Image (cartoon, rainbow, N blue to C red; front, side, top):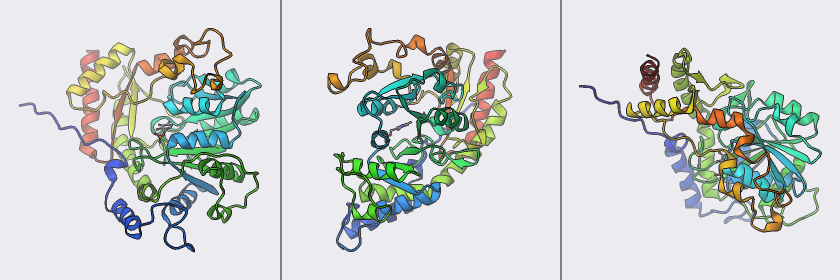
Length: 411
Ligand SMILES: *Cc1c(COP(=O)(O)O)cnc(C)c1O
């Protein structure tokens, strides 16, 4: 009888939660100190958020790191810290997470949507095409574990004096040309939401080499304040301004710290699984693996291939699913121009919308027909997620299933 192999348990950081997270969370609870800036001893603030930042600085080799309440808060804080605001434009890939767009709108600047290339990351050539005198920044998204082509992006952006932000929410621990993602730009953000490679349920992090960005981010995330802990890191130079509140709690920091310490282990496990699958399915003539700017730097938690068209991608998904291969999820990402908040062109208040002066909304640059490459690529990929609980046998089953379905479809 032909019995199906059971589906492996999905998940990355969340599936790796264990005694390390328990120990650090218990430590916070037993000390009864849940707020990062003060606890029971006025001389000694609680350690978890501070340790998370210290270890992140060491891991990434950047002088400044700031823990915040979410990846979205990190994006909004970083854009504001960089001075992005009304009248400015920010180049962002059309294929990106919701908050890559909404954070720019909330800053008052106008998101300018760019095509992705076959790596599903920003096509570096788009910077020259979309650049105007109003362009202030480029928001690069390292999509699902793999780097955008940072050398080309940095060259195109810095030649034009643009601020570059890397969104590493989906690719902490991944590298490009041997250097960690997040260290190729002026500032980078991370997310610790549940689905991300490292998680604390919610949470985020900003890293930067720039002390001014750091100070402004600290003030933006803590009601304009710059507390003694931060003075110890770098003295204040900015005049105070109104900030928001996006601080991280000690409980969140405890989980994030344990997860940061196992990030490379989770990555290496995913890479070893991917290494069993990719060389096999690369041989198959009717499909193409997602080409990466740096294949060696990939986190390896999701393997993408392109079928010839949308119909054969759908057939691939159905038949792989019937073999108990996870593949139906088309990820939470879909193009910004298909989302309701873009179709309305609205912000919380009409005068805050960066689109209010554009006639005939959706204007050129915000309609599906303006993105033939992104439309084509994102309609015909199949995504194969891998995870911390997947075994080598699970990986071999995935590879054999793709080979078998490929043979069925091309006979
Ligand atoms: C998840 C994600 C975010 C937002 O992170 P949250 O912590 O959920 O706010 C931002 N950018 C990208 C690319 C993401 O995948």
